[in-house]
Length: 376
Image (cartoon, rainbow, N blue to C red; front, side, top):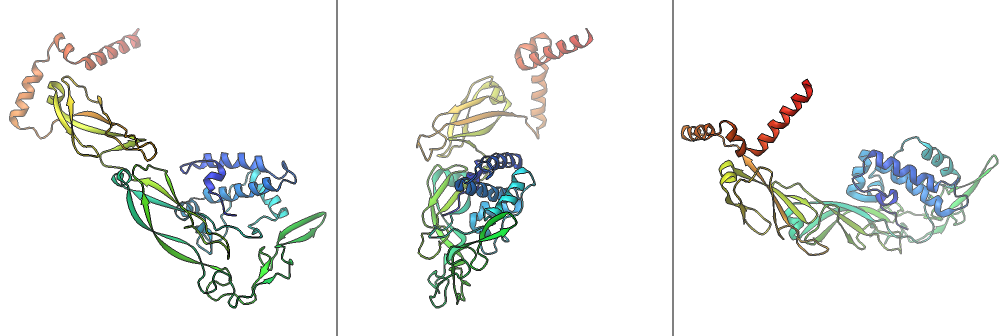
């Protein structure tokens, strides 16, 4: 049985912070705690799954490795063995106690099981995400050993473990408690290999980099995942491989900011264009378009250009482009330009100037009212 995605186990998004992870883990641990679910093997397994997920995601280094490589990051030394410890709250204390009683600590399941799923994060430019692209990726994962055909045995001999008689677990008496733990001789698999394969050392799988061509459909966005069936980790001999999940992350763009299927951008205009009106050319994903700016447009005004956003990978209906005009103060003025502006400014005198600057008038009235209230 393959491992579930750790974010899915805790019920959080891939951007969850430390507090969100901690709350989710506590909620999960209390729900599936063995003391609350006596004899419930499903709850017991869920409790262990929650603990393992939190131990990885709460550690910054392990989380980065998991985001890049998925469960493969902690196989055969990539992640340094078992995930690190979490925080010492009630959930962890109970986990440490009941983990030993119920055979925790990574006991392997008997019988055929599927290979683990693998995660890969692919960064794209906005243009690539919008138009679609095909890219080659290199994924470190476990593949079936060619030398022993995945059996783990140099000569093909596989025997039943003498320590557990093929059960994978043994019982131990400690005081009044009878505990069931993974067999120390076979590691819980129920079988032994007298002559392990010299290539994979009896594991049946080896760490390799797999090169794949991945087609990204047009219109994908941050967080979208593409499933490549059978491209994950190889399973034990005779079992199916896991899947590969490619998660898309779109890099920030110099001009556009994406919001779902809509795009937003800023359009700088001169003060004369804002006052007199003009036509500005603005970029879109399909080329420039004309944006008509009416006279007396204020800085910050947002104009909507219909169907110039992104075609969604789901609905295929294009979004809109929202252009925010920003009145730009002129710099590097020539003497003539400065003189013209000084003459222009001299026309704003007396009470008549108020009607030309509605926002300034409102601001000044607000300031006057503020001081009146302060001194009253």
